[in-house]
Structure formats: structure tokens, C-alpha cells
Amino acid sequence: MVLTGDSLGVLLGLVMLPAAKYSAVNDFLGLPYTSTVRVHIWLAYLAFWTLIAHIAFALLERSFTGNALVILFNLKGSKPGWGHETYLYIVGDVAFFAFVFVLLTSLKFVRRRFYNAFYFSHFMVIVVLLFAYLHAAITIHYSIPGIALWTIDGILRLASRFKGNAVLNLEKEPGGFRTMTIATTRGAVCRPGHFVRICVPAVSIAEYHPLSVVRTTPESVTVMFAPDKESQWTARMTKHLESRLAAGGKAPLVQVQGPFGSVSRLASDPAVHSVVAYVAGTGAAPGFSILRAAVEQRQRAVDDAAEFLAAGDAKKDGKSVSADAGTGVQLRRGGPRLYLFWAGAGAGLELASEVVDLARAVAASDATLTLHVFDTSEPGSERSVSVAGEVAELPGVEVHASRARPHLLALLNRHVREPAAASVDGERAAPIGIFICGPDRFIEDSLASVSKFQRENRGMPVELEVESYGL
Image (cartoon, rainbow, N blue to C red; front, top):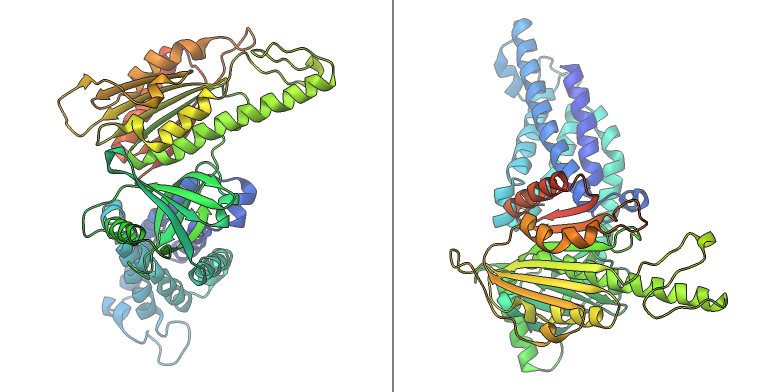
């Protein structure tokens, strides 16, 4: 019983460590946000089963010593005064039931459908830790680092309540999506893959919801979301903001926390020459920012190399730039090959403002973009559809549209395999960077496709980043 109790104390301390969204530890170690969330969930499940084992051993010990099991629910233990067993069991019972309550409201079903129940029930962790401490004081020692990080995180997030940020624009996009631009200096520290948490006090003063960042400037952040059912927060927020912006006058205010999440490495890795964003719904938001960052990274590399070559009296023909071998820098002919495969329940996704913005950036660079959008609003009616609009006419951009569900393996074989297999230095192929974001089933099918793609292509190197709606 002592072993399971001490193990449980250690696990509770470990569960607390990844709980803070503002975490200097995660930033310093470069830990991916989605990975730390998964570790947090796994540790919580492990702590639960350790707690069950702890209770089972406690029951066995009571039965072996001849004491009645009802003593576990007595206010006072087997001794009259405050001491070793006074209130030992009743405070343990409170900690147990509080922990089970937090765990049940954290299940994926609740997280996806009743976000507020999930979010606010997590504050019951305070009750868990308090009564766990009263049950066994050693628990608090393991939890102090996590409690400290969580407290700092709470103070930083609380500070956002004292500052309103003006909503500059709210655009309706094809497929029913919305892009919202907010005036905030947090844009200066946002990176591809980040998200922010938004509160609209006029809609609900207590609710903060995570929204993916699609674009930033030093003075603004643009997020992307899809309004849910009429009763849901995003639908109420959309209705309120659209009515306020249509009425003119003073811009509506929101509160912004963040940025949170992990910075994608796909755009900044010089070894990755092909970047694939395979996304569904609002999962396109981080995909857009990653692909746009890849174009910007390439342009900076070209500018730096051109400056270096100019200083060394080197020549460049406008298509191919090679630095001196001693520098270890060599830019391949042509820019990065970018691929956006986007599935959404609506037609005309290729006309979305972020798609157009990305395509324009590609056309102005030496990169290439292959865009394939999928309208999944009518299952069973699979066919190609015509593409219209500015994107189809831009140089360096290839556009496809289908009314069907996407299949990543087929897309990789059709569009990515042959260009990626081309040798970079005559000995090895450049790795393919693949970013996947969508619902759980979408993720599972995608990972299976990537594995099969690698097997069929003799282990072609892949740099993989995954974000799930379920986290």
C-alpha cells in the first residue's frame, strides 16, 4: 500500500508539469505542445489505475488486520486523536472522488462536445491536491514544481482580462469558415503552428476558446474558425461580432491569451524541400501559416545567399544560386515544393482568402504550389469539379478540386513521390515534410498512408508533424 501511495504521489506531480500552457520549461526544452498534452493525458490515466491499485491494497490490508472495511469511510480513523490515522480515510475518499470527477469530464467525448464542462472541472484538481496532501503529506512535495508552473500560467492568463483587443475584420470564407483579425501585439511573437485563446465578454465573460492562428503581423493576429450550432459559443460569437461590425462605430473588443502551442520546424528545416499540408476543416489554419513560412524562409535564404555572392564577386543567373563550398550552404535550383490538400464541407475552398494570399506569395517567389481541395459535403458523389478564380491563373500554382473524400496515399503517389525522389546531392533524396491536422479518424488514416508510402518507396525520409482535434 505504501508503494502504490508513494507512486501515486510521484505521478500526481508529473501530471501537473505539462498542465501549464505558458511553460518556460517546455519552451526551453523545445517540447512539442501536442506531445506534452498527450503525456499529460497518459500520466493521468496511469495515475488513475495506480489509485485503484492503492485502494485495493488498502482494502486487503484492512481485511488482513481484522478491521471492518467500514472504517475506510469513518470520519475518524482507528485512533481517537489527530495522528497517524485520524481522518486518513475520509480525506482520501474526497481526493479519490474529486479525481474521478476530473477524469470523467476530461474524456474525449466531453472535451469535444462540452468544452466548458471539461475546462472548469479541471479546477477540481485543487481539491484533489489539497485532500491528497491531508491524506499523505508527501504528495505535495512532488507537486510543487507543477503547482508553481500552473500558478505562473494562471497569473499570466489572468492579466489578459484587463486588456481588450479590437476586432478589425471578420470575413466569411467558402465552406462556412470565418477569418477574424484582431489588433494585438501578440502577433509579434506568434509562429507557425501556434494558437490563441479568445474570450468575448459580451458573449460570455467566463469562456475562453482555442482558435488556430492563420496569419500574423507585429500588430495583429488572424485566426480561423467554423461557427458551430446556434447554441454553441462560436456561433454566438460570430453573430455578435457580425452585428457589431455591420453597425459601425467602436470596434468590438475581445480578450486574447497566448500564443500557445508548438512552433513547426518544417518551414525552417533547410533539408526539407517538399512540404505537404494535409488538413481538414479549420486544421487548414496552421497549414497555411506553415506553407507561407516556408516561402518566406526560402526568400530570406535567397536574399542572404545573393548578398554573400555579391560580396564575393560571384555570378548568379536568377534561377540557380550556389554559395562557396567552404560555407556549407547550397541552394537548390528552384524554390520549395509546397502541397496543400484541404478537405472541407463546402465548395469553392480554392477561393478562400488565405488560399489566394498563399498562392500570390508563391507566384512572387521561385516556389511551386500544388493545391487540391475536397468538398466533402455530399458523400457518395465523387467527381472532379471545375476550378475558377485568380488562383488557377497564377504562375507556379497547380489547382485541383474534387467532390470526394481525400486519400493521402493516393495524393502522395500522384503529386509528391516523383519530385521528392529526385536526388539533391546525387546520393540521397530530400526528406518530405508532412503536416497533418484534423479529426481523429482523419489522423489515423493519414498515419497509415504515410507508413505505407514509406514502405512502397523504400523508406523515403519523412519529417512528420501531427495535430489532432481530440487534444
